[in-house]
Amino acid sequence: MGVLDGKVVLVTGGANGIGKECALLAAREGAKVLVNDLGGSAAGGDEGSAGPAAEVVKEIKAAGGVAIANSDSVTNRAAVKRMIEQAKDELGGLHAVINPAGILRDKMFHKMTDEEWDLVIDVHLNGAYNVTRYSIEHFREQGEGSYVLFTSTSGIIGNIGQANYAAAKMGVAGLSRIIAMEGAGKGVRSNIIAPFAWSRMIATIPVKDEASAKRVQRMKDHMRADQVAQLAVALAAPPKKTAEGAVNDATGQVFVARGNEIFLMSQSRPVRGMAKLEGWTPETINEHAFAALKPSFYDTGATTSVFGWDPV
Image 1 (tube, rainbow, N blue to C red):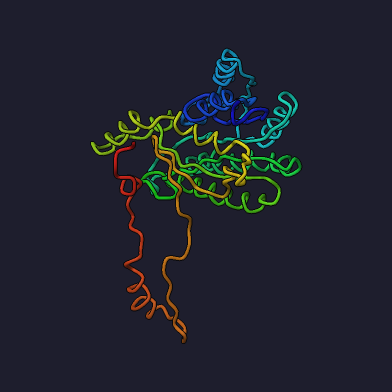
Image 2 (tube, rainbow, N blue to C red):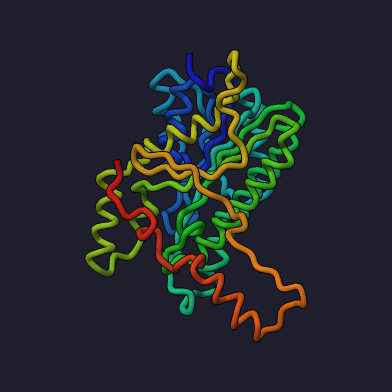
């Protein structure tokens, strides 16, 4: 018995990296899987191919599972609507969406082109909107559904050269939070994962110095896509009822998957506050408020300054 027995799961970006491992594991855990992948390059912008998704479907079927392929882009709203209908028509329903589909177009912000900005926002943020918006009514009507969306430490912490990616991924965090809030009474859950894992996307990151080379090599050696898939599939599974109540009903949460480590991340809440009964002026804010609050300011360190130890 698998945690997804009898369920139908849509996995986007399912032909490579995290998406592929999620599709394979979901199938092993009993789900019927719609494997979606445009079949394009990690950088995006090319026409793509149906072949990569079909290969993953072939692998699932060879292991005794049930799967079908789809090679549409998550940026195409009409195609995403058809994708949702395909799952219902050909696999008998839809119960979870795992959405790691993505691309990178890294560039220092002052050198970034409009095209590089728009393309990354379209795939990551609009793509997340499309797959959730066109399945949410189905989930609400059936009283069950789980979204596993993907953010990044590039957004929730920060990495130089990834302003487009960070902005999109912070948008996904806000989207997931609201879906979780609005779906709470309808059995609809939404969580996000910031993954550390070697993938085609990570391989496109420019290596410009010894420190970044060591970081990328550490990811390649110790942080695998299949480890991230374990958390994604757990979140996709329906809540398991026990004598003590539901044990896996997480919703509205932000997780980091890093090797064999799982972290629950904090979300924005007040850190420290000040009040001035007679009101503030720019001068008093500069002289008093900022001076008092400064010890609680966050620094501008990148992800490596927060996760500075080797993965387990």
